[in-house]
Image 1 (cartoon, rainbow, N blue to C red):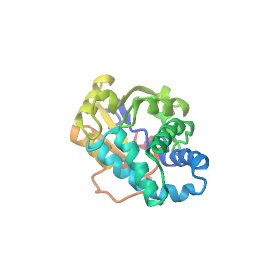
Image 2 (tube, rainbow, N blue to C red):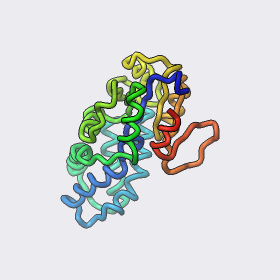
Image 3 (spheres, rainbow, N blue to C red):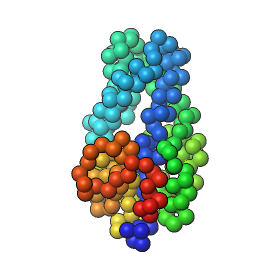
Image 4 (cartoon, rainbow, N blue to C red):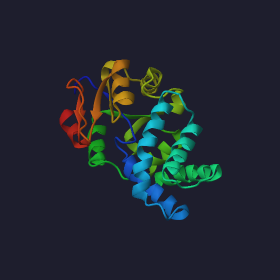
Length: 228
C-alpha cells in the first residue's frame, strides 16, 4: 500500500479537528451569555445525539442547511424545557458558527502525523462541513498548509457518501483511485463512501466501536506512522 499510495484524503471534523471539544467550548460561551441557568454538560448531553441525527438527514439531502441549524437547537431547548424564540435560535446559530473556529483543539498526535505524512504524500481534505467555517478551522488551527486541496460539499455539489464529491476531490487533486486513500471517522460517509467509490479507506475509531474485521481501522492518529 505504501508504494502505491500517493494521495491521502482526510476528513476534518472528528478526525483531525476535535469537533466535540471545540463545540462544547463554543456553546459554553453562548450559554453563559444567554442561558446561564443551563449547564453546558446538560446541554451537550441532549444536543449531541440530536445534532448527529440532523447531520444524517442533511447528508441524505432530507433537510436543508437552514433546517439543520434550526432543528438541532429547537429540539434541544424543547427537551430542556427552555423557552426560546425563532429569532433567538437564529442569533445562537450565527454565533455558534462564528465562535466555533475560535477553539482549535486537534486530536492527539495530529500535527506530528501530518508532519510525517506530508513529507512523503500529498494530503487533501474532503469535508461535508460548510466552506467558510472549515477554512477558518484549518487556518486557525495552523494545519491548512499541510493540504494541497480542500474539497467541501458546497464546492462539489454533493456530500459524502455521494460518489460525486469523491470524484470531484480526485479531479482537483489530479489523483487516481488506485493511488488514493480516505481516512475518516464516519463509517457511512467516509469509509463506505470511499470504498463504494473504489478507493481504499481507513476508519478513525478512537471510541473503538465494533466493526467488521475487513475494515482497516486505527484508534489513534499516531498509528498512521506505522501504516505509511
